[in-house]
Image (tube, rainbow, N blue to C red; front, side, top):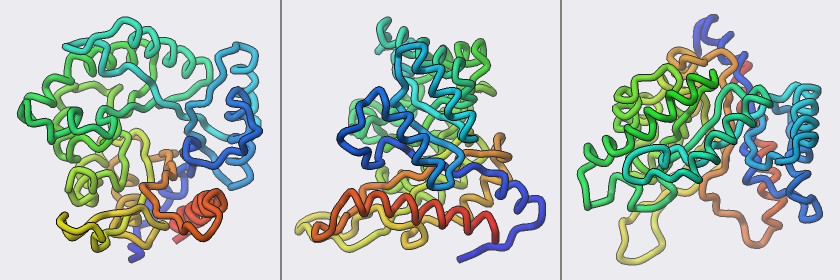
Length: 303
């Protein structure tokens, strides 16, 4: 369903920057890891993207400088993830992970990356609302010391830290966590479909987290009948944009209205637990998914 927005909202949506999560793109096997970011930057430009999320940032200073200059020349903003956020303080404090966190923040500063992202869930029950050893309330509160420490470091570096709803808590629970952190430098990396992983309507997550969103993962998923006997009769899979149960048009409009970074907001395409056709080349299907998704979001910007 296409929703018609007023002129101000349409202008904001048009300003948003479409990007790709490079970690899921089928990079050719002959591309060495130290050259992956360069390859993905050129690919992003070919696809018409103006953002690239990548973890493949070289360590060597001259190569890092070259990546920054290449991104600038192509008109592409970079985004990356930071490790160690939830090991900065609290029960899981880890000095080595803190050093990695600070190093990545410094790299982001060098590359003029305004937003870095993280996620807590790690696709594990222990780091989710389903951990039965503690209540959801206590679980969320246990994350506060680390996030408050991260907020202080992010503020000193003048960088925004975006926490993804990463298969751990519902959008409303994540909003409560961010309210408790109470920092202008810590917000949300809104994933539009991860709500399915915690048995939550992702459209509710979008509603809850849009006012906190510093960046996104744009993802659609469809609910289908389960083929596994003896289980819940429904399951969700990733699908082409517009074919699933996530109202992406509504999501983008809410982000335009409520996100603190609405103008120029990163709309980063990510496939979600896709079912590729085994009779066709998977790498080709993955590449086609990104092309189709870019076209879908561009079409949304011109409604």
